[in-house]
Image (tube, rainbow, N blue to C red; front, side, top):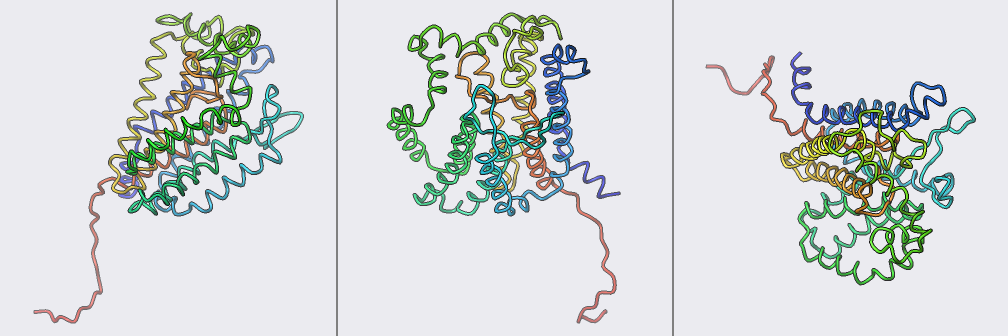
Length: 400
């Protein structure tokens, strides 16, 4: 009975419930975005919404299970976790598929593919969690000499391997998230600022080469459409910016309180915002729930990030802190990039909004990271002493 009581006491229910409620809200927004298509097909719910709910449900259970495992033991399994992630990324070059408008992309692995149903898995989402674990193990191994040039170079190579593979599959958005996780975790682990200055200087010096050789024409056009639209002809510009412009129009039309749930003109139109159930789901929130709905959503997401970083701050060791802060950087960077895309402040790079966007892979894998954060919370709780009694114990000392 005492163990059950401690199990409940040591569970971070605040973080757990915040994540579940946010996922439920996200499912509602995805349902609204796909509602008309489902009605036209004679189905009670859109396929995207159904997959999201199922994936989040599995993730919620997995999250709680993971929280009972000591996070330090999980990190010690880094060779297995890293190997599985690299294997899945490698399979993309053989079996990977991409969207119809980007035939060269290889971002998804078909898990079930038949005439009745097709289910895909995006390995880069799991690889983020794998990187979180393996990079934590790497930093922990060199923490006493982390500012040696050799260790800085090896840590940089650590992130460049998965980033390079993901870039080759034409998933620039996910590669960016790895970069933000790398920067954040290096900063938290005590890397001196001079290395960050050198990195920034190197990137600026290599910018022309990266622009020409590293970015595809598709990505260059998306960047120019936001920051230098006059460099594109009118036809190309309208085609590139169409999705983001429609999303911004939808958000603006919602004004203060929105048009009402299931009442958004753009959201409920067949010619509304493209991919508004995934990358542009924030436009659904803005149009149907207005500024108030957007503000409340951002407030809840901020609370989730604050809770995660609070757990990291309270951790008694670097391993726990890195897992929490790495998760916060992963979720936080995705939030900033996704909303920046919807507001036409950043170019569109295919990043989902955590807990809100459709997508089985993202909704499942994010709960794996939350499970690790909850494990950090559990195993850093101040536990009550347990009463015990020793019997049949012999000593060399005689009783007096």
